[in-house]
Amino acid sequence: MSTKWNSQVLSKNGAANFGDLLKDEYSIILLQGKNVFGDLIYCYLKVAYPDVERLQLALQSNPSFTASDYGTVIAAGKGTPPDSVKSEIAATYRMFEEPRAMRPPPPLGAEKKAWDEY
Image (cartoon, rainbow, N blue to C red; front, side):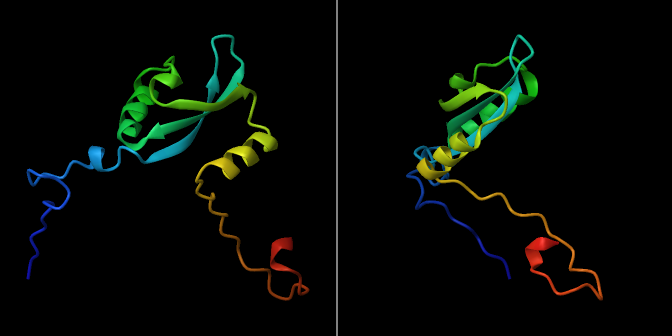
């Protein structure tokens, strides 16, 4: 048995236009690299979903692009983002929490300790 999908609910002509559907949605992306002087820099960029693919192509093909051409710079600086900036970004914008790495179970015969101590 097969199913025929229909996207007419999403558009008037029957072809789904996901760029229009998601035009008001965005993602916060942390970009890190080096400036023209060789300094390590970071930039939090608010990118509308329709522009994410354009940004990805620029990252792959143009090492010296201007981040603000692809979204709104909400924080930037030299080095790595300090904890205060990370906290402010996380409090202000919707953020996905980075998944914690899977840890192996404690060794057999080990004293019972809190899981986080391993």
